[in-house]
Length: 192
Image (cartoon, rainbow, N blue to C red; front, side, top):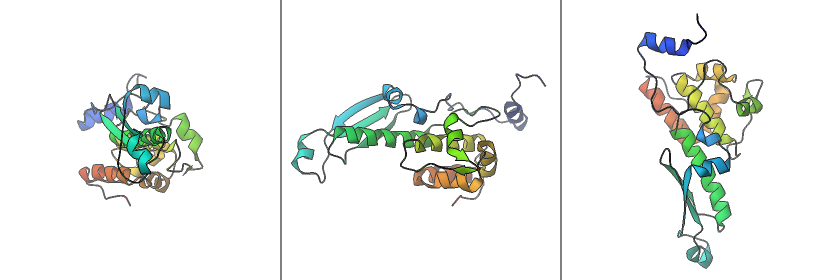
């Protein structure tokens, strides 16, 4: 077989499947450095109500981010500092991008350097509040989507256990809901 023939594309062609036109090239936007991600965003500031005293009502500390290529938005305004709210808005945007955007998964070894550094002996080590979590979640969802939402196939490609993969996704309820929505379309049981 010639090297330029992708076995996944060949299998898709035999099954009558067409590539998803909504896939974006790697790197996934959730894995970009803050500066690179912010260059793709529109940043806005505003005021928000709620607890925090007079300072909160007089100063525009709420940060709004819109990722221009996708239209995905996030905001944060619960802190009194613009810097703290910006950091939180970026993290929330990364999570929303991880759920809402699918990147192309290469044939062969699909793992990024980040994934390799965070997985050892089939176990995934990443706290859901850590800066790396959205990128790890995005990679997991990309590979799940490439494996037609089958957790066992995706775990094999990511060289982790299926329970570790499901555990990573389960840490963020909207991600688990998205996976189960996609699995329901394929007539697969919901993950818990």
